[in-house]
Image (cartoon, rainbow, N blue to C red; front, side):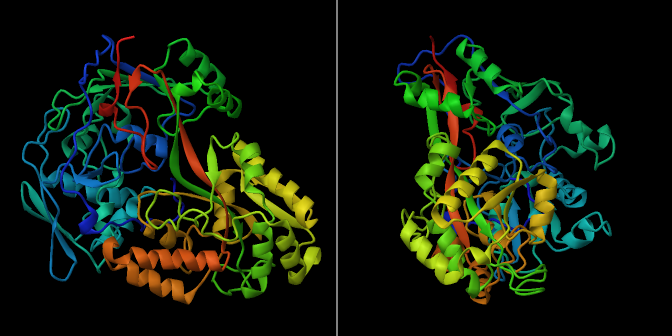
Length: 562
Protein backbone atom coordinates (compact mmCIF):
# COMPACT_ATOMS: atom_id res chain seq x y z
CA UNK A 1 0.00 0.00 0.00
CA UNK A 2 2.94 2.30 0.33
CA UNK A 3 2.59 5.47 -1.71
CA UNK A 4 5.53 7.45 -3.07
CA UNK A 5 3.61 10.64 -3.71
CA UNK A 6 1.04 12.68 -1.85
CA UNK A 7 -2.12 10.78 -1.01
CA UNK A 8 -5.46 12.18 -2.06
CA UNK A 9 -7.64 9.21 -2.76
CA UNK A 10 -10.64 7.42 -1.45
CA UNK A 11 -14.22 8.46 -1.01
CA UNK A 12 -17.59 7.16 -0.23
CA UNK A 13 -21.04 8.58 -0.57
CA UNK A 14 -23.03 9.39 2.52
CA UNK A 15 -25.72 7.18 1.07
CA UNK A 16 -23.40 4.18 0.96
CA UNK A 17 -22.14 4.42 4.52
CA UNK A 18 -23.91 2.17 6.98
CA UNK A 19 -24.69 3.86 10.25
CA UNK A 20 -25.04 0.64 12.21
CA UNK A 21 -21.79 -0.49 13.77
CA UNK A 22 -21.39 -4.25 13.67
CA UNK A 23 -19.89 -6.20 16.55
CA UNK A 24 -17.32 -8.86 15.87
CA UNK A 25 -17.87 -12.56 16.45
CA UNK A 26 -16.80 -13.99 19.71
CA UNK A 27 -18.46 -16.67 21.74
CA UNK A 28 -19.10 -20.23 20.81
CA UNK A 29 -22.77 -20.14 19.88
CA UNK A 30 -24.69 -22.68 17.83
CA UNK A 31 -23.65 -25.65 19.96
CA UNK A 32 -19.93 -25.03 19.40
CA UNK A 33 -17.55 -25.81 22.25
CA UNK A 34 -14.52 -23.55 22.49
CA UNK A 35 -11.03 -24.80 23.22
CA UNK A 36 -9.61 -23.92 26.62
CA UNK A 37 -6.64 -22.18 24.99
CA UNK A 38 -7.79 -19.25 22.84
CA UNK A 39 -4.34 -18.16 21.70
CA UNK A 40 -4.24 -17.17 18.04
CA UNK A 41 -0.71 -17.47 16.66
CA UNK A 42 0.69 -16.87 13.20
CA UNK A 43 3.98 -15.96 11.50
CA UNK A 44 5.17 -13.05 9.36
CA UNK A 45 8.18 -13.05 7.06
CA UNK A 46 9.17 -9.46 7.82
CA UNK A 47 8.97 -7.26 10.88
CA UNK A 48 6.37 -4.51 11.09
CA UNK A 49 7.55 -1.43 9.22
CA UNK A 50 5.78 1.25 11.29
CA UNK A 51 3.81 0.93 14.50
CA UNK A 52 2.86 4.63 14.69
CA UNK A 53 -0.51 5.25 12.96
CA UNK A 54 0.80 8.56 11.67
CA UNK A 55 3.50 6.75 9.71
CA UNK A 56 1.79 3.50 8.76
CA UNK A 57 1.45 2.54 5.10
CA UNK A 58 2.31 -1.17 4.82
CA UNK A 59 -0.62 -3.58 4.52
CA UNK A 60 0.71 -5.93 7.19
CA UNK A 61 0.98 -3.10 9.73
CA UNK A 62 -2.52 -1.81 9.06
CA UNK A 63 -4.08 -5.29 9.14
CA UNK A 64 -2.68 -5.97 12.60
CA UNK A 65 -3.02 -2.59 14.25
CA UNK A 66 -6.58 -1.86 13.20
CA UNK A 67 -7.29 -4.21 16.13
CA UNK A 68 -5.33 -1.89 18.45
CA UNK A 69 -6.30 1.62 17.30
CA UNK A 70 -9.51 3.10 16.02
CA UNK A 71 -11.04 6.35 14.81
CA UNK A 72 -14.36 8.00 14.21
CA UNK A 73 -15.30 5.39 11.60
CA UNK A 74 -14.10 1.96 10.53
CA UNK A 75 -14.69 -0.60 7.79
CA UNK A 76 -16.51 -3.77 8.75
CA UNK A 77 -15.86 -7.20 7.27
CA UNK A 78 -18.09 -6.37 4.28
CA UNK A 79 -16.22 -3.08 3.65
CA UNK A 80 -19.13 -0.96 4.84
CA UNK A 81 -18.07 2.22 6.59
CA UNK A 82 -19.65 2.24 10.04
CA UNK A 83 -19.34 4.49 13.10
CA UNK A 84 -16.70 3.56 15.61
CA UNK A 85 -16.05 6.41 18.05
CA UNK A 86 -18.48 8.69 16.19
CA UNK A 87 -22.16 8.48 17.10
CA UNK A 88 -23.21 8.65 13.46
CA UNK A 89 -22.59 10.43 10.20
CA UNK A 90 -21.13 13.95 10.40
CA UNK A 91 -23.33 16.94 9.91
CA UNK A 92 -22.22 18.59 6.67
CA UNK A 93 -22.79 22.28 5.97
CA UNK A 94 -24.83 23.53 3.04
CA UNK A 95 -21.67 24.48 1.16
CA UNK A 96 -20.37 20.89 1.66
CA UNK A 97 -17.13 22.14 3.23
CA UNK A 98 -17.63 21.88 7.01
CA UNK A 99 -18.02 18.50 8.72
CA UNK A 100 -19.20 18.38 12.32
CA UNK A 101 -18.42 15.18 14.19
CA UNK A 102 -20.10 14.02 17.39
CA UNK A 103 -18.33 11.43 19.54
CA UNK A 104 -19.44 8.78 21.97
CA UNK A 105 -18.88 9.78 25.60
CA UNK A 106 -17.93 6.33 26.91
CA UNK A 107 -14.77 5.75 24.89
CA UNK A 108 -11.51 5.16 26.72
CA UNK A 109 -7.94 4.50 25.74
CA UNK A 110 -6.55 1.14 26.84
CA UNK A 111 -4.95 2.83 29.89
CA UNK A 112 -8.31 4.22 31.01
CA UNK A 113 -7.86 7.80 29.76
CA UNK A 114 -11.11 9.23 28.36
CA UNK A 115 -11.13 10.08 24.65
CA UNK A 116 -12.17 13.63 23.89
CA UNK A 117 -12.25 15.94 20.90
CA UNK A 118 -8.89 17.42 21.90
CA UNK A 119 -7.33 13.99 21.32
CA UNK A 120 -8.63 13.83 17.76
CA UNK A 121 -7.53 17.36 16.97
CA UNK A 122 -4.07 16.57 18.39
CA UNK A 123 -3.85 13.29 16.47
CA UNK A 124 -4.87 14.81 13.16
CA UNK A 125 -2.55 17.80 13.49
CA UNK A 126 0.28 15.46 14.48
CA UNK A 127 -0.32 13.23 11.46
CA UNK A 128 -0.26 16.24 9.14
CA UNK A 129 2.96 17.52 10.72
CA UNK A 130 5.01 14.32 10.72
CA UNK A 131 4.25 13.74 7.02
CA UNK A 132 3.97 9.97 6.85
CA UNK A 133 3.08 8.32 3.56
CA UNK A 134 -0.63 8.98 4.11
CA UNK A 135 -0.45 12.38 5.79
CA UNK A 136 -2.31 13.97 2.93
CA UNK A 137 -5.46 12.24 4.06
CA UNK A 138 -5.81 15.67 5.67
CA UNK A 139 -4.80 17.65 2.59
CA UNK A 140 -8.38 18.86 1.98
CA UNK A 141 -8.53 20.42 5.47
CA UNK A 142 -7.94 24.17 5.62
CA UNK A 143 -4.45 24.94 6.88
CA UNK A 144 -2.98 21.57 5.97
CA UNK A 145 -0.25 22.98 3.70
CA UNK A 146 1.15 25.24 6.41
CA UNK A 147 1.34 22.37 8.90
CA UNK A 148 2.84 20.03 6.30
CA UNK A 149 5.49 22.64 5.46
CA UNK A 150 6.32 23.33 9.11
CA UNK A 151 4.90 26.87 9.05
CA UNK A 152 2.19 26.05 11.59
CA UNK A 153 1.42 23.37 14.16
CA UNK A 154 -2.36 23.29 13.83
CA UNK A 155 -4.69 23.15 10.85
CA UNK A 156 -6.96 26.17 10.90
CA UNK A 157 -9.86 24.06 9.67
CA UNK A 158 -10.08 22.02 12.89
CA UNK A 159 -12.24 23.57 15.61
CA UNK A 160 -13.24 22.19 19.01
CA UNK A 161 -16.93 22.63 19.81
CA UNK A 162 -16.97 20.84 23.16
CA UNK A 163 -15.34 17.80 24.75
CA UNK A 164 -17.25 15.43 22.49
CA UNK A 165 -17.68 17.27 19.22
CA UNK A 166 -15.46 19.12 16.77
CA UNK A 167 -15.56 20.33 13.19
CA UNK A 168 -13.31 20.17 10.16
CA UNK A 169 -13.58 22.79 7.41
CA UNK A 170 -12.16 21.96 4.01
CA UNK A 171 -10.43 24.35 1.64
CA UNK A 172 -12.73 23.20 -1.16
CA UNK A 173 -15.42 20.62 -1.71
CA UNK A 174 -14.10 17.04 -1.60
CA UNK A 175 -16.92 14.53 -1.54
CA UNK A 176 -14.45 11.68 -1.01
CA UNK A 177 -12.98 13.04 2.23
CA UNK A 178 -15.64 11.57 4.51
CA UNK A 179 -14.25 8.09 3.92
CA UNK A 180 -10.65 9.19 4.34
CA UNK A 181 -11.58 9.84 7.95
CA UNK A 182 -11.96 6.06 8.40
CA UNK A 183 -8.33 5.40 7.40
CA UNK A 184 -5.54 4.56 9.82
CA UNK A 185 -3.93 7.99 9.55
CA UNK A 186 -7.03 9.40 11.26
CA UNK A 187 -6.93 6.96 14.20
CA UNK A 188 -6.83 8.70 17.56
CA UNK A 189 -3.74 8.51 19.80
CA UNK A 190 -3.37 9.50 23.45
CA UNK A 191 -1.76 12.93 23.52
CA UNK A 192 -0.96 12.68 27.25
CA UNK A 193 1.07 9.50 26.71
CA UNK A 194 2.88 10.77 23.61
CA UNK A 195 3.81 14.09 25.19
CA UNK A 196 5.04 12.34 28.33
CA UNK A 197 7.11 9.90 26.27
CA UNK A 198 9.09 12.62 24.49
CA UNK A 199 8.75 14.72 21.37
CA UNK A 200 5.38 14.72 19.62
CA UNK A 201 6.96 13.67 16.32
CA UNK A 202 8.83 10.77 17.90
CA UNK A 203 7.74 7.22 17.04
CA UNK A 204 9.32 5.29 19.91
CA UNK A 205 6.17 5.37 22.04
CA UNK A 206 4.38 3.15 19.50
CA UNK A 207 6.97 0.35 19.81
CA UNK A 208 6.76 0.09 23.60
CA UNK A 209 3.84 -1.96 24.95
CA UNK A 210 3.70 0.34 27.97
CA UNK A 211 3.03 3.42 25.84
CA UNK A 212 1.38 1.97 22.72
CA UNK A 213 -2.01 3.13 23.90
CA UNK A 214 -4.99 2.87 21.56
CA UNK A 215 -8.77 2.62 21.61
CA UNK A 216 -9.14 -0.72 19.84
CA UNK A 217 -10.28 -4.00 21.38
CA UNK A 218 -6.71 -5.34 21.70
CA UNK A 219 -3.53 -3.98 23.25
CA UNK A 220 0.11 -4.79 22.62
CA UNK A 221 1.44 -6.65 25.68
CA UNK A 222 4.95 -7.77 24.71
CA UNK A 223 7.42 -7.16 21.93
CA UNK A 224 10.90 -8.27 20.96
CA UNK A 225 11.83 -6.51 17.69
CA UNK A 226 12.45 -8.84 14.75
CA UNK A 227 11.27 -11.80 16.84
CA UNK A 228 7.73 -11.52 18.21
CA UNK A 229 4.84 -9.28 19.26
CA UNK A 230 1.98 -10.25 21.59
CA UNK A 231 -1.47 -8.73 22.04
CA UNK A 232 -4.37 -9.31 24.42
CA UNK A 233 -7.89 -7.88 24.80
CA UNK A 234 -7.84 -4.42 26.36
CA UNK A 235 -9.06 -4.09 29.93
CA UNK A 236 -10.89 -0.85 29.20
CA UNK A 237 -12.52 -1.80 25.90
CA UNK A 238 -15.66 0.28 25.53
CA UNK A 239 -17.25 -1.36 22.50
CA UNK A 240 -18.73 -4.75 21.71
CA UNK A 241 -17.25 -8.04 22.84
CA UNK A 242 -13.56 -8.52 22.14
CA UNK A 243 -14.45 -12.06 21.05
CA UNK A 244 -13.13 -15.43 22.15
CA UNK A 245 -9.42 -14.86 21.53
CA UNK A 246 -7.47 -14.17 24.74
CA UNK A 247 -4.00 -13.77 23.22
CA UNK A 248 -2.50 -13.04 19.81
CA UNK A 249 1.08 -14.16 19.25
CA UNK A 250 2.93 -13.09 16.08
CA UNK A 251 6.39 -14.43 15.27
CA UNK A 252 8.85 -13.17 12.67
CA UNK A 253 10.05 -16.22 10.70
CA UNK A 254 11.72 -15.40 7.38
CA UNK A 255 11.79 -19.04 6.22
CA UNK A 256 8.34 -19.84 4.82
CA UNK A 257 9.10 -23.57 4.84
CA UNK A 258 9.87 -23.36 8.54
CA UNK A 259 6.60 -21.49 9.06
CA UNK A 260 4.62 -24.28 7.43
CA UNK A 261 6.47 -27.00 9.33
CA UNK A 262 5.54 -25.34 12.61
CA UNK A 263 1.93 -24.85 11.45
CA UNK A 264 1.61 -28.50 10.47
CA UNK A 265 2.87 -29.57 13.90
CA UNK A 266 0.20 -27.42 15.56
CA UNK A 267 2.53 -24.57 16.49
CA UNK A 268 0.53 -21.93 14.61
CA UNK A 269 -3.19 -21.31 14.39
CA UNK A 270 -2.99 -19.98 10.86
CA UNK A 271 -0.81 -18.57 8.08
CA UNK A 272 -1.99 -15.70 5.89
CA UNK A 273 -2.92 -12.88 8.22
CA UNK A 274 -1.07 -9.58 7.72
CA UNK A 275 -0.67 -10.08 3.96
CA UNK A 276 1.39 -13.29 4.21
CA UNK A 277 1.43 -16.23 1.76
CA UNK A 278 2.66 -19.78 1.34
CA UNK A 279 5.43 -20.77 -1.06
CA UNK A 280 4.17 -21.56 -4.59
CA UNK A 281 4.84 -25.30 -4.27
CA UNK A 282 3.12 -25.50 -0.88
CA UNK A 283 -0.03 -23.69 -1.92
CA UNK A 284 -0.28 -25.95 -4.98
CA UNK A 285 0.15 -29.01 -2.73
CA UNK A 286 -2.61 -27.88 -0.38
CA UNK A 287 -4.92 -26.84 -3.18
CA UNK A 288 -4.56 -30.15 -5.05
CA UNK A 289 -5.05 -32.46 -2.05
CA UNK A 290 -8.76 -32.96 -1.16
CA UNK A 291 -8.03 -33.24 2.57
CA UNK A 292 -5.45 -30.48 2.85
CA UNK A 293 -7.63 -28.18 0.75
CA UNK A 294 -10.13 -28.02 3.61
CA UNK A 295 -7.60 -25.85 5.46
CA UNK A 296 -6.96 -23.48 2.53
CA UNK A 297 -9.10 -20.41 1.90
CA UNK A 298 -8.39 -18.41 -1.27
CA UNK A 299 -10.05 -15.00 -1.35
CA UNK A 300 -9.89 -12.06 -3.77
CA UNK A 301 -7.29 -9.44 -2.98
CA UNK A 302 -7.70 -5.85 -4.11
CA UNK A 303 -4.63 -5.74 -6.35
CA UNK A 304 -4.26 -5.64 -10.13
CA UNK A 305 -1.03 -6.23 -12.05
CA UNK A 306 -0.70 -5.01 -15.60
CA UNK A 307 1.74 -4.23 -18.40
CA UNK A 308 2.67 -0.58 -18.12
CA UNK A 309 3.02 1.19 -21.47
CA UNK A 310 4.87 4.50 -21.62
CA UNK A 311 2.53 6.98 -23.33
CA UNK A 312 5.08 9.73 -23.99
CA UNK A 313 5.08 11.19 -27.50
CA UNK A 314 8.11 13.43 -26.98
CA UNK A 315 9.68 15.78 -24.39
CA UNK A 316 6.90 17.33 -22.29
CA UNK A 317 4.19 15.66 -24.35
CA UNK A 318 1.59 14.79 -23.16
CA UNK A 319 2.94 15.10 -19.60
CA UNK A 320 5.57 17.30 -18.03
CA UNK A 321 7.58 14.20 -17.04
CA UNK A 322 8.01 12.97 -20.62
CA UNK A 323 11.60 13.13 -21.87
CA UNK A 324 11.46 10.95 -24.98
CA UNK A 325 9.06 9.47 -27.53
CA UNK A 326 8.00 5.97 -26.55
CA UNK A 327 7.08 3.49 -29.31
CA UNK A 328 3.89 2.80 -27.32
CA UNK A 329 2.99 6.48 -26.90
CA UNK A 330 -0.17 8.20 -28.05
CA UNK A 331 -2.48 7.16 -30.86
CA UNK A 332 0.52 6.04 -32.95
CA UNK A 333 1.38 3.44 -30.32
CA UNK A 334 -2.14 2.06 -29.87
CA UNK A 335 -1.72 -0.83 -32.32
CA UNK A 336 1.44 -1.85 -30.50
CA UNK A 337 -0.29 -1.77 -27.11
CA UNK A 338 -3.14 -3.86 -28.48
CA UNK A 339 -0.77 -6.38 -30.09
CA UNK A 340 1.35 -6.86 -26.96
CA UNK A 341 -1.73 -7.38 -24.80
CA UNK A 342 -3.39 -9.82 -27.20
CA UNK A 343 -0.14 -11.81 -27.51
CA UNK A 344 -0.29 -12.91 -23.86
CA UNK A 345 -1.94 -16.22 -22.98
CA UNK A 346 -3.05 -15.38 -19.45
CA UNK A 347 -3.89 -19.01 -18.66
CA UNK A 348 -0.26 -19.90 -19.25
CA UNK A 349 0.83 -16.92 -17.17
CA UNK A 350 -1.37 -18.09 -14.28
CA UNK A 351 0.10 -21.58 -14.34
CA UNK A 352 3.68 -20.35 -14.29
CA UNK A 353 3.64 -17.13 -12.26
CA UNK A 354 0.53 -17.60 -10.11
CA UNK A 355 1.03 -21.10 -8.75
CA UNK A 356 -1.64 -22.53 -11.04
CA UNK A 357 -4.08 -19.77 -10.21
CA UNK A 358 -3.77 -19.93 -6.42
CA UNK A 359 -2.12 -16.51 -6.07
CA UNK A 360 -3.92 -14.61 -8.82
CA UNK A 361 -6.66 -14.86 -11.44
CA UNK A 362 -7.02 -13.44 -14.94
CA UNK A 363 -7.82 -9.72 -15.15
CA UNK A 364 -10.62 -9.52 -17.71
CA UNK A 365 -12.78 -6.64 -16.45
CA UNK A 366 -10.59 -3.57 -16.57
CA UNK A 367 -7.88 -2.26 -14.29
CA UNK A 368 -10.04 -1.98 -11.15
CA UNK A 369 -9.94 -5.32 -9.35
CA UNK A 370 -12.89 -7.66 -9.44
CA UNK A 371 -15.06 -7.23 -6.37
CA UNK A 372 -14.45 -3.49 -6.07
CA UNK A 373 -16.70 -0.64 -7.12
CA UNK A 374 -15.86 0.39 -10.68
CA UNK A 375 -15.15 -3.13 -11.93
CA UNK A 376 -16.50 -3.41 -15.46
CA UNK A 377 -17.53 -7.07 -15.30
CA UNK A 378 -16.02 -10.38 -16.36
CA UNK A 379 -14.68 -10.56 -19.93
CA UNK A 380 -15.41 -6.92 -20.75
CA UNK A 381 -11.82 -6.08 -21.73
CA UNK A 382 -11.37 -7.18 -25.38
CA UNK A 383 -7.58 -6.79 -25.11
CA UNK A 384 -7.26 -9.17 -22.14
CA UNK A 385 -7.75 -12.26 -24.30
CA UNK A 386 -5.22 -14.38 -26.16
CA UNK A 387 -5.47 -13.98 -29.94
CA UNK A 388 -2.15 -14.72 -31.59
CA UNK A 389 -3.36 -14.16 -35.16
CA UNK A 390 -4.90 -10.78 -34.42
CA UNK A 391 -1.88 -9.79 -32.33
CA UNK A 392 0.47 -10.56 -35.23
CA UNK A 393 -1.74 -8.65 -37.68
CA UNK A 394 -1.88 -5.54 -35.48
CA UNK A 395 1.84 -5.83 -34.74
CA UNK A 396 2.75 -5.78 -38.42
CA UNK A 397 0.39 -2.87 -39.10
CA UNK A 398 2.14 -1.00 -36.31
CA UNK A 399 5.59 -1.55 -37.82
CA UNK A 400 6.73 -4.90 -36.46
CA UNK A 401 10.00 -5.74 -34.77
CA UNK A 402 11.65 -2.58 -36.09
CA UNK A 403 9.52 -0.59 -33.62
CA UNK A 404 11.08 -2.29 -30.58
CA UNK A 405 14.66 -3.30 -31.50
CA UNK A 406 16.09 -3.25 -27.95
CA UNK A 407 13.06 -3.72 -25.75
CA UNK A 408 13.63 -3.82 -21.98
CA UNK A 409 10.88 -4.61 -19.47
CA UNK A 410 11.70 -3.25 -16.00
CA UNK A 411 10.26 -4.43 -12.69
CA UNK A 412 10.98 -4.14 -8.99
CA UNK A 413 12.69 -7.21 -7.59
CA UNK A 414 10.44 -10.05 -6.42
CA UNK A 415 10.00 -13.69 -7.35
CA UNK A 416 6.51 -13.02 -8.72
CA UNK A 417 7.56 -10.03 -10.84
CA UNK A 418 10.51 -12.00 -12.20
CA UNK A 419 8.25 -14.93 -13.15
CA UNK A 420 5.80 -12.59 -14.87
CA UNK A 421 8.51 -10.84 -16.88
CA UNK A 422 10.17 -14.07 -17.97
CA UNK A 423 6.84 -15.51 -19.09
CA UNK A 424 5.94 -12.34 -20.98
CA UNK A 425 9.34 -12.41 -22.70
CA UNK A 426 8.82 -16.03 -23.69
CA UNK A 427 5.32 -15.44 -25.02
CA UNK A 428 6.20 -12.28 -26.94
CA UNK A 429 9.13 -14.09 -28.55
CA UNK A 430 6.89 -17.00 -29.56
CA UNK A 431 3.90 -14.94 -30.65
CA UNK A 432 5.43 -11.72 -32.00
CA UNK A 433 9.08 -12.68 -32.56
CA UNK A 434 10.07 -9.86 -30.19
CA UNK A 435 13.25 -10.25 -28.18
CA UNK A 436 12.83 -8.60 -24.78
CA UNK A 437 15.23 -8.27 -21.87
CA UNK A 438 14.01 -8.43 -18.25
CA UNK A 439 15.66 -5.98 -15.86
CA UNK A 440 15.09 -5.90 -12.10
CA UNK A 441 15.68 -2.95 -9.79
CA UNK A 442 15.38 -2.46 -6.06
CA UNK A 443 11.97 -1.11 -5.10
CA UNK A 444 13.05 2.41 -4.19
CA UNK A 445 14.99 2.93 -7.43
CA UNK A 446 12.22 1.40 -9.51
CA UNK A 447 9.48 3.60 -8.09
CA UNK A 448 11.63 6.70 -8.31
CA UNK A 449 12.41 6.14 -11.99
CA UNK A 450 8.92 4.93 -12.88
CA UNK A 451 7.41 8.10 -11.44
CA UNK A 452 9.48 10.02 -14.00
CA UNK A 453 8.13 7.86 -16.85
CA UNK A 454 11.57 6.44 -17.56
CA UNK A 455 10.62 2.99 -18.85
CA UNK A 456 9.07 2.26 -22.29
CA UNK A 457 7.40 -0.88 -20.93
CA UNK A 458 7.31 -1.96 -17.30
CA UNK A 459 5.58 -3.79 -14.49
CA UNK A 460 2.75 -1.90 -12.86
CA UNK A 461 0.50 -2.91 -10.01
CA UNK A 462 -1.91 -1.23 -7.66
CA UNK A 463 -3.34 -2.37 -4.34
CA UNK A 464 -6.47 -0.46 -3.43
CA UNK A 465 -6.53 1.50 -0.20
CA UNK A 466 -10.30 1.55 -0.04
CA UNK A 467 -13.20 0.45 -2.18
CA UNK A 468 -13.60 3.61 -4.25
CA UNK A 469 -12.62 4.21 -7.90
CA UNK A 470 -11.07 7.57 -7.10
CA UNK A 471 -8.21 5.72 -5.43
CA UNK A 472 -7.25 4.39 -8.85
CA UNK A 473 -7.81 7.38 -11.11
CA UNK A 474 -6.35 10.18 -8.99
CA UNK A 475 -3.10 8.33 -8.41
CA UNK A 476 -2.68 6.58 -11.73
CA UNK A 477 -4.55 8.05 -14.68
CA UNK A 478 -5.32 11.75 -14.39
CA UNK A 479 -2.71 13.99 -16.02
CA UNK A 480 0.54 14.05 -14.02
CA UNK A 481 -0.75 11.43 -11.57
CA UNK A 482 1.96 10.80 -9.01
CA UNK A 483 2.10 7.00 -9.30
CA UNK A 484 1.15 6.59 -12.94
CA UNK A 485 4.53 5.86 -14.48
CA UNK A 486 3.04 5.98 -17.98
CA UNK A 487 2.59 9.75 -18.38
CA UNK A 488 -0.93 9.13 -19.62
CA UNK A 489 -3.03 12.22 -20.27
CA UNK A 490 -6.60 12.45 -21.48
CA UNK A 491 -8.54 15.72 -21.21
CA UNK A 492 -11.89 13.94 -21.24
CA UNK A 493 -10.86 11.62 -18.43
CA UNK A 494 -9.52 14.56 -16.38
CA UNK A 495 -12.81 16.39 -16.73
CA UNK A 496 -14.82 13.34 -15.79
CA UNK A 497 -12.58 12.75 -12.76
CA UNK A 498 -13.14 16.30 -11.52
CA UNK A 499 -16.90 15.87 -11.89
CA UNK A 500 -16.98 12.46 -10.21
CA UNK A 501 -14.77 13.50 -7.29
CA UNK A 502 -17.16 16.29 -6.37
CA UNK A 503 -20.15 13.95 -6.06
CA UNK A 504 -21.10 11.14 -3.70
CA UNK A 505 -20.35 7.69 -5.07
CA UNK A 506 -24.02 6.90 -5.46
CA UNK A 507 -24.14 9.63 -8.11
CA UNK A 508 -20.70 9.17 -9.65
CA UNK A 509 -20.14 5.41 -10.03
CA UNK A 510 -21.33 5.38 -13.64
CA UNK A 511 -18.91 8.20 -14.42
CA UNK A 512 -16.01 6.25 -12.93
CA UNK A 513 -17.01 3.23 -15.00
CA UNK A 514 -17.04 5.46 -18.09
CA UNK A 515 -13.49 6.48 -17.20
CA UNK A 516 -12.47 2.85 -16.80
CA UNK A 517 -13.97 2.11 -20.21
CA UNK A 518 -11.84 4.91 -21.71
CA UNK A 519 -8.74 3.14 -20.38
CA UNK A 520 -9.88 -0.16 -21.88
CA UNK A 521 -10.80 1.33 -25.25
CA UNK A 522 -7.37 2.96 -25.51
CA UNK A 523 -5.43 -0.04 -24.15
CA UNK A 524 -3.76 2.21 -21.61
CA UNK A 525 -3.05 -0.83 -19.44
CA UNK A 526 -2.32 -4.39 -20.53
CA UNK A 527 -4.27 -5.96 -17.69
CA UNK A 528 -2.83 -9.29 -16.58
CA UNK A 529 -4.02 -10.58 -13.19
CA UNK A 530 -6.04 -9.78 -10.08
CA UNK A 531 -4.62 -10.79 -6.73
CA UNK A 532 -5.64 -13.64 -4.45
CA UNK A 533 -4.99 -13.76 -0.69
CA UNK A 534 -4.26 -17.16 0.83
CA UNK A 535 -5.39 -18.13 4.32
CA UNK A 536 -4.33 -21.47 5.81
CA UNK A 537 -5.97 -22.46 9.10
CA UNK A 538 -6.79 -25.64 10.96
CA UNK A 539 -10.33 -26.90 10.49
CA UNK A 540 -11.11 -26.26 14.15
CA UNK A 541 -10.36 -22.54 13.76
CA UNK A 542 -13.32 -20.41 12.69
CA UNK A 543 -13.49 -16.83 11.43
CA UNK A 544 -10.15 -16.72 9.61
CA UNK A 545 -10.23 -14.89 6.27
CA UNK A 546 -10.87 -11.42 5.00
CA UNK A 547 -12.30 -9.20 2.32
CA UNK A 548 -10.40 -7.79 -0.67
CA UNK A 549 -8.73 -5.17 1.53
CA UNK A 550 -8.34 -6.43 5.09
CA UNK A 551 -8.11 -9.52 7.26
CA UNK A 552 -11.10 -10.21 9.45
CA UNK A 553 -10.92 -8.58 12.84
CA UNK A 554 -9.35 -10.75 15.53
CA UNK A 555 -12.65 -10.60 17.42
CA UNK A 556 -14.18 -12.66 14.58
CA UNK A 557 -11.89 -15.63 15.24
CA UNK A 558 -12.48 -18.50 17.65
CA UNK A 559 -10.79 -21.83 18.26
CA UNK A 560 -13.04 -24.86 18.77
CA UNK A 561 -12.31 -27.77 21.02
CA UNK A 562 -10.19 -30.31 19.19
